[in-house]
Image (cartoon, rainbow, N blue to C red):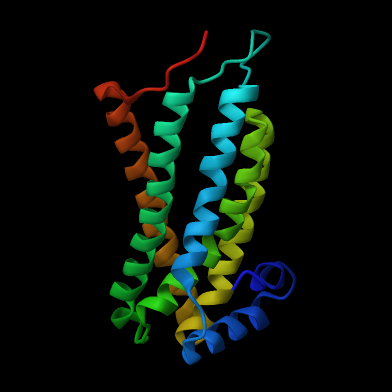
Length: 199
């Protein structure tokens, strides 16, 4: 499955067909890929926030304590895995509306590979510069949206027209899930799980 990553950037439609073919044969483990990709942002974020820190303005870099960064990294990892699986469940739940049939494995692969650019740019969290992470994040988001709109018709065997509507529904669900996670994060900070700085 990892071999498809470069293919999705270069030739997404053909690569989606190859992924679907492997899933139809049952020759891949999507959950293992979810775990590998979901580890990238939390691990890199832990390194960046404890060793380099981030700056706002001209002040000293702000760093997190190891215990605070570790807690946040574990929650970050769990949020990513939960989010990918929630989108996969939403894909399956919406299938009947768009006259599509989809197994959970196909939905999980679609969800995982669509999120892949956003997870890969997690390496930039090693150097937590806000403007750099923001710009790279926008680029990754654009690629993820492109992968979603090219992947849905192929993975779910539906027309491009119906796939466009289905993709838009999935995108709307993803945005709602993101807002929900931000609200949960704010609530957790309010209950004492806010980051602890070293200085």
